[in-house]
Each structure stands twice: as C-alpha cells, then as structure tokens.
Image (cartoon, rainbow, N blue to C red; front, side):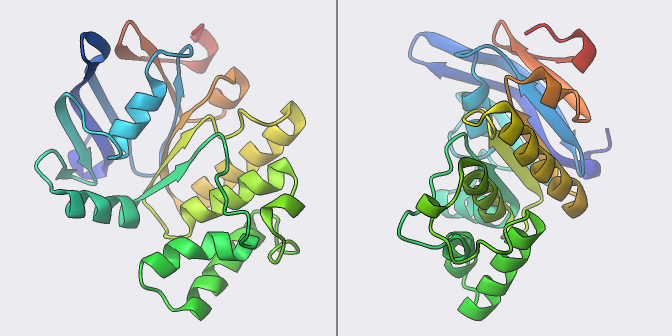
Length: 231
C-alpha cells in the first residue's frame, strides 16, 4: 500500500502490562476511506489496540503513524491536537452528558475546538439529522432510546469531521434489531464522509459488511476474510 494512502499505520506495535504481553509485533495499515472489523475474544487486546491506535495509550514498543505523521516522539499537546482534529471515537456506552440536549452533546467538541456556538449547533444538527434524529435535537439522553443515544454518540464522534474513526463494540449494548439500525447509520455516514474506520465487534454479521476483517490471535493481528473468521 502506498504510504500516502494510509490513514493509519501500526509498525511492530507491542503492549505490555508488567510481565503480561497483550500485543506483540503488530503490523497493520488502513487506507483512507476503508473500513476494517477488529475481532477477537474478550481479553484478547482489542480495546488496548484501539487505545494505542487512537493515541489514548502509548505502546510499549513500535510506532503509530496517523495520516503519515509518526506519533511516538510527539508531546502531549501534539497528540491531543491529532486526536481532536483527525480522530473520532465511539464506545459501547454512549457517555453522553445527561443534563445536555442531544444537540448540545454533539456540538460540544466543536465548541472545544473554538467554533462559534451558532456554527457548532448547525453542524451538530446536520449530523444528527443525517442519523435520523432531526426531531430529537432538544431531547436529553434520558428522553432518548438506547439506539438514539448511541446515534447521538456517533454524531458527536463525527462532528469534528475526523479522517479516522475508532469504534469499540459500538452496538454491543443494544438488542439485535436496534444494533442493526445503529450499525446501518454508522456505516452509511462513514462511507458518505469517506472516513477510514477500525471497528471492534463480536458480531460476525457486522464484520462481513466491512471492507476487511482482522483478528487478534496469540497477541498478534492476523488478516482474514469474514467468511473464514472463527474467532
């Protein structure tokens, strides 16, 4: 793969916690506009890998390259800037602020980035509407269903228009029908916006809908086809 096409590149990444090695010699590239499913049993290191790739956690060894920028030598402020400007995160639990409305929750990252409130609100409303929540802008999280809460969290992750999205079991807390609807919305907007996305999931049905599938086996990352994945 041409390096200029890479949104994310991991080079011989390792993660150790004391004497416990969770990830070992992980090499991985994700091109711009590409989606990849990350599979592996609980405790295999999926969340650790996402945290390292998303600059939330430093690897014990190796290099993380975001949009052709090597990050190991960056200071905290520089890493924070990349997270703010280039990366989006969606988790299993929505982590919305309960006293804020949906539009306020989504607009918050834009306000932190220095945008005017009127512009931040307009951009938040556009993403929420694209995710089917145009009539729920003024609702607080407690007034939203589980699927609506998660779609609000997706809008919040995307409002700064990142080039790379990380999602950690984004539908794992939802029933199958709601899970399918939320994943449809997530995949549609990722493809519409042309993002690269690395999505950890236990759901093999969802994995088959992405461009590639990788699985953590014996501390290493192995590429497989969705049809043959047995992790």
